Length: 258
Image (cartoon, rainbow, N blue to C red; front, side):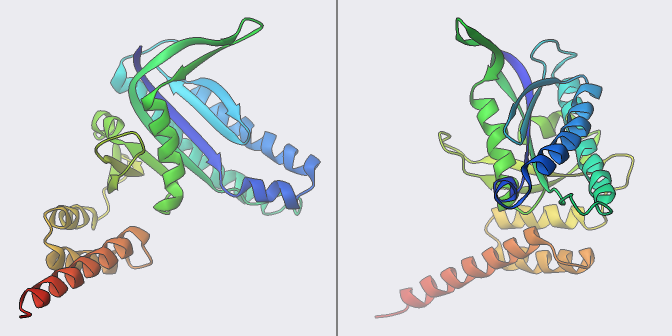
């Protein structure tokens, strides 16, 4: 059992693609995708654990480690580069009528994870397993819920916040855990400045969690204006704040009834 950082990535809507696409062409495109994505993992000194259909599972700290912080940094940098590589691939595929645009979700988490060989005597597999792995997979799945492409666990964010810019997303309820877990969206590395609206956004999150819904809602609206375009997370919180204010108003009105 040791500290390991795990990355899951998955192609969105791939099952539907298999039903409507030519099998040979889709496999060829999938192999082009795997070539670039796995190349990023290996470049960042990660272990390709396995392919799970169209999903990739990779780890840092399983076979060797440069320390928990460095393992986490390499995993996040791999996720960041996978995002960039996919953009380039999609641009190349625009000129090819037999290629489909891919969208992916990525989850990254670190925890004390069991590392070893499991399986049948005729087929053993070196792998990682445990709660930390399950949470990484859950983060990947939650990218759909929060309309983002990369979600990072709190343990990884704490180890890498000096190298990367993150945005708080939400407290995520996870099956098997008694408390929700904090999740973050990866915005960029520190070679770029923080967005001007990020500090206000995090202040709005603080107000929301202190149940100051009127002030939080107004601040989220201001952030939305600063972003200057649609933003799912701000819209989500504005809707939540309005709903909580309505409930509070309803309770107050009900308490005055005789």
